Length: 306
Image (tube, rainbow, N blue to C red; front, side, top):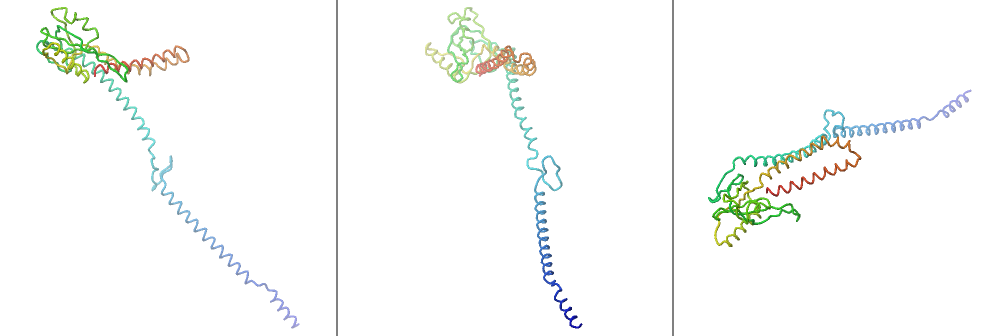
């Protein structure tokens, strides 16, 4: 019995499982798990800090709210400013064109109004030609001196005809600009048909440099041919076409305004009526040709008044 008890005790001790290895394994597992958890927690914290820094540095999203502490997106209002600046340019251009047209009308009307204060003079008394005034006197002799042709890139845009008129005693002269046949229509072989002379009435202008040089050259030739001196001004001339040119200036100023308004108000109606028809093409071509004719006419008048 005693032996059996000892054997049983020994057997029990021998069969008791060794838990030392298991506890070590469990501790290792627990240790590894805690380390993994700490690493994960650290990574999560760093990610959160990075996200927070990025969110603080970023501006308000387009179309979203702008929380406190966040900046506005760079160039957030540029689109509105760009639209405003894009509208300013055309408005300024239209305003400048309108100002130029109105000024052209103003110059034409002013020239016609000044005619009411025409200054009557006698050419024998060395008449004084003041720029921007109307003058009137009697001439007894006349001769053509030269024709000036305006050109744009060698394309002739019109001619100007200049004449010299003289006093009764042939001692004083004045330069006039008139139509091509003015001298032939008012003088016979350079002499006035009437003893009272021919009435010369026009607007005093300053010639451009080329014209002034030609006038001075004609005077020198006349002095050499007559072997005598003449009194008169070569830096002023009397424009007998001033009334006509003033009317041209008024037309140049008014026509574009009427033209554009007609296109805006009548153009859509005409287009609906004539769209796809031969008459529509004819009308469209006529409108385009009219614009080109106006441009050429404006250039011609501009050269005549410069």
